[in-house]
Length: 222
Image (cartoon, rainbow, N blue to C red):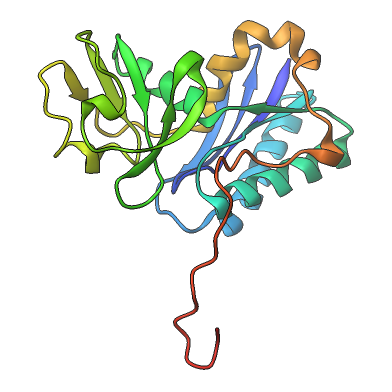
């Protein structure tokens, strides 16, 4: 199984080739706001690499959200175009699961709260049975009221440090979702990948909340 993995849900833009659940090559930028320019270049480099290695792409795996509206749209349109053009399936992977895989790589072990910034003190994180939810973080009880060791991380986590002060709550810095982390999740289920692929014609990113456009600050526009 050779899978092209795409991650554009946050300010980090990355794409990778993974084979049999193991990352082979990754292209990544942490500069932010360059997804539309960088992702096509990364895809081109990875497809050239695949040809050089005599690898045939079997599927495209995509970080499905929640996350940046713009980033998710760029990743989704690119992934769907590749799947249509190469006649291969699309595998959507929840972004919060990708963040958890990134945190485990750093050695975190306990109850996990991946956090994707949703502006102000709101974050996208996990709830019961791992289901994604949007939460305004006011204190620990906003998320979890137990005494176990808790680890929180992601681009929405740093701003929560001021209100998450209990000693059993641990902030893990520099945890970002990367395309190579999709390989960790796909690995155990690669033999069943066709059962988790989605219908390309109807697939949309998982935004979690509806997009609301802000008023324009340009004079003359409303």
